[in-house]
Every structure is written in structure tokens, then in C-alpha cells.
Length: 359
Image (cartoon, rainbow, N blue to C red; front, top):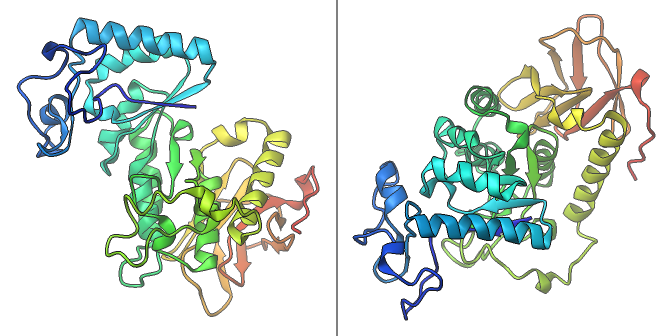
């Protein structure tokens, strides 16, 4: 996948940009975004300030438009990229992206960095997928260690409902726990079980999971800095980890990837294109079906066995957890019992068509 930008150019003290070397190729007069709720400012003003600005290209100018369209087409054909991530997607009018998407002719993932679900979802009308920032902000609230700030699973389920309402297809969107522009997720939780639950949700919910490099190395940013979870501290060089493959998160992600591969091998792409359906929820536990898979995630420990009634009738009695190989039973009252808050990935025992070793 290729990372591209069409909205702006980088800081340049010489003001000599090629091929955009005329004032008319930039939005005039110069202004800076002060109010991100003002769409005119977002599209016509520059990111930054007078000390450090990213000059905003005039993407209404015919030369700028034709240059970008021919460049993306030639670049994709030459290097055979199968997808592109587009930076600052909301900073250019949507009609521009309709043409751009056609010329790229590959999967396009747009960055719309805000929490407003209806606003972000509207951009999927001109892109295959969108980086799912609304979900990111919710996951950050739900899976954090701070007891005062941590939110209920109900807000996660509500976000899923909002997704169905405002996105064309969330399964084509990029979902993530953090990235180079946002706080390191592991700066907000170091509880290994909570991390496992967050990773399971990321890898087995609606969307294309994106793991930010360094998560597998337990990168947390710089704990000695006040804002050490974010830029630039969240952009640690990976080579300092010696690319360690023995960390527990690396091994856990390996296991989750194995399960995803086996699900694809046995159930096809339909599994990933299926939409999750809630079958139980309380403040700390969320249970949903995605295709044949039942997913159980929690964000807080509970002291005693949890016995809950599922909302929809489940046809199979015995279910096997692909993570632990443990067998769970659903009784004739449609109730399921769990005794800890580790995540579970359950498939009906009677329909298991592949072996999986949890070692």
C-alpha cells in the first residue's frame, strides 16, 4: 500500500515547489485553519501556522488536478500497488476524490481524523474505505486502565449501531488502536488481559485491522515526558527493539493472525464481509456473532462466574474457544457461563472443520 497526499506540500524555505511553482497553484490568500468545524477553512486554508505551515494546494486549479490524476495513475501502473492510503482526505472537496479514485483504480483508504461518525462516514461515498477514527476514540475510552475514565461497553455497541447507520460498509474501513498521529495505546493500558481483549476486538470485528508498528514490542512512547504518548514520542524507531519476536504481544498477534487465516481458509472472504450482531452486552462484557464466530470481549475483571442470557437463539450447545481450546456450553435456557474476563473466540464444536492448537 502506498501512502499519498494531495492536499498540501511540506514546509519549504525557498518556496520553490516543482511542478507547483506558481502562486496560482496554492490557495490564496494564505490562511490557517482555526476552526475544524468550518468546512471552508478545512478545505481552503493551510494546516499549521506562520512558523510551520503546510502550504495548501489549490485542488480546484486545472493544472493541479490533471497533475495529480496523471501522477497517481502512472505511479500505480508502474509500481503495481494494490492500495493507497490518502492523507488529510477531508481537506479536499469530495468531488475531487471521485476522479482521483477512478484514476487510481485500486483500493483507496482515506484519512478523516475526527470523531463525528456521520461526517466521517459520508466520505465513504468517494472512497472504498475510511480510517475509522470514531471507533478509535471509543476503543481508547473502553480499553484503558484508568477506572475513572474507562467507559462502558455500551458505548462500543452504540458505535457499532452508528457505523451501520452512517457508513456504506464498515468492513472495508481501516480500524486501529493507535497510529503515528495519536497516543500510543499501550501508554493507556499495561494490563495484559485488557490488551488481549482490545486486540481480539480489533482483529475480529467489522473492518480491516491495522496494527501500528511497535505495538508488538510494547512501545508506550516516552513515560518521562508529560505528553510522551503522542508525537514525536509515539514514533519510536523500530530497529531499537532488535525486531524482537519473543515478546508476548508479538506471539499473541501471531496467534490471532493464524486464526484469521484459518477462518478465511475455511469460511472464505464472506467471514470478513459479514457484519457483527450483538447477542449480549453489559457494562463490562460484549458478546457478538460475526459469521459463524462468537466473540466475547471484556474490559474489566469480575470476581465471580458470569452467567448471561443471549438475546438470540443459539442452535449449537457446545462451543470451542480457539484461543484456549476450552469447551463452553449453552444450556437449554440459551444461557452461557464464563468464569474469567479473558477474550474468547468460539466456534460450534459440531461445525469445527479445522484443528487449532493453542500452544
